[in-house]
Image (cartoon, rainbow, N blue to C red):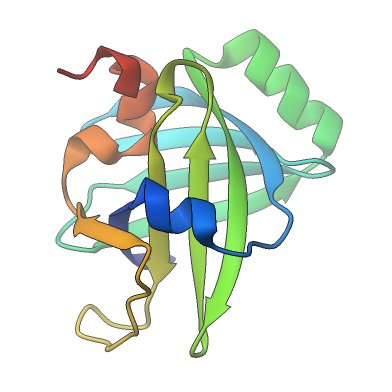
Length: 156
C-alpha cells in the first residue's frame, strides 16, 4: 500500500519574504472526488500530469497512490471532469536531508502559504526553519481539497 506521512504548517509571511528561494513551479490541480474518506486529484505541473488517490488521514498518515499521466490528458481531465480546482506556486527547499514543499496559493486562496514535509515515520525528528509557523497537520480546512470548496479568502 502507498503511504504518505506528512506534517503541514502555516508559513510566516514576513520570514518567507526575506528568504532566498529557488524558482517555484506552477501547479494547477483539481478534484474529481472530494469525500471525507478519500479524494481523487488531477495535477498539472509545467510539463507533467499526475493522478492521485488519497485516503483518510489518521494523524499525519494516509494512503496515497500517485501515477504520472500524459500532460494533455491531465489538462483534459481538469477541463472536463474537475468539480473544484486551485492553483499555486510550489517551492522545494532542502534542509537537513528533508525537502520542504512550500505552496504559495493564488486565486481565491491568495494570501495563504503552507509548507509540508514528508517523513518516514510520524515520530521522525526534523529541523524547523524560522519561516515555519503554526502546525496545522490534521486541520481539515488546510487540506487542498477543502481549499477548493472553502477558500482562504472566505475564512473569517
